[in-house]
Image (tube, rainbow, N blue to C red):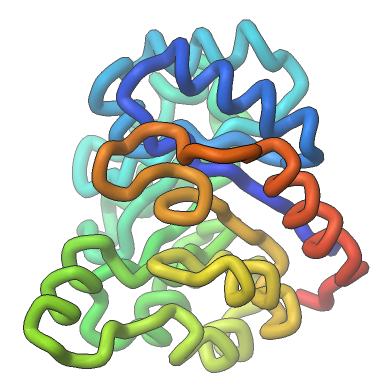
Length: 232
């Protein structure tokens, strides 16, 4: 598949999210993500506003679903999301419910292996239960806590090749990547490149980063899309 650039709108204000999304799409971004902070702040209203503003653009709702899977996925689908996120650490019945809601309401399911004791097995578990994508994710709190103790901060690149080899669905790597690392993830076989904090969103204030972000994003998109088709 062709590499996809997704911007994670980890913001807390829908007006700023819409402005940032417009700029990102001009720069060549393919998918928009209603990040967890935006969903917490704006909920279904925020996703509906995004769908109204961008009727033809894929929208990922980063729900991080742990329970009530069918209802959460159904509600976001009806609000205009095209993709929803469920956690591998949820009960398998919850994951099955999200997958069923995806089939019933025409949305695709992204399974997130954050916090799994065995990240590879977590990814395989998600695929086996019917997820359309795997998000290989090292969490914000985990990274910061480990770094604060003076230890090496874990990276999704540590096991990314192993994750890609273990599953037959597209993989996305998330969590503390540098710009160069994010752009390079397609070379690992992971075609979905996500840009969020701290690359394009201020990781502490949860607002759009300063500087000429549109020009910055355009260069990123050009570099990612230049990878060409990625075998998955």
